[in-house]
Amino acid sequence: MTERSSESQKRFDALFAEHGPDIVAYCGWRAASASDAQDAVADVFLTAWRRLEDVPDDPASARVWLYATARRVLANQRRSSR
Image 1: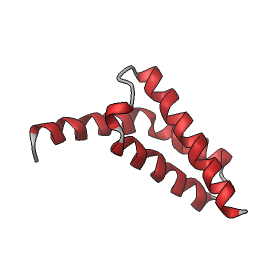
Image 2: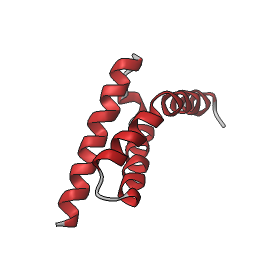
Image 3: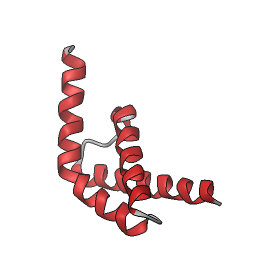
Image 4: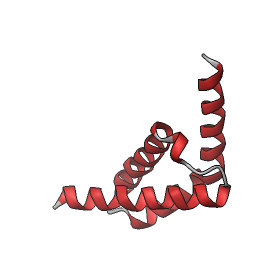
């Protein structure tokens, strides 16, 4: 593992540890089913991993970014189920 990817992994792990439970709760509340909520959480954090450089460093701003991503993921789920 390169130094860059190791630093990215640590940042992602910290992001997930700090905000994961809130995003799980949000998706569980807003999704149509438990499996949809699990899929949404996975998509949110996959997006965060892929776009880690776009996630703000400030924890409060990162939380807002994750919630906005979750909102879009859930909206996409609802559109695709219609």
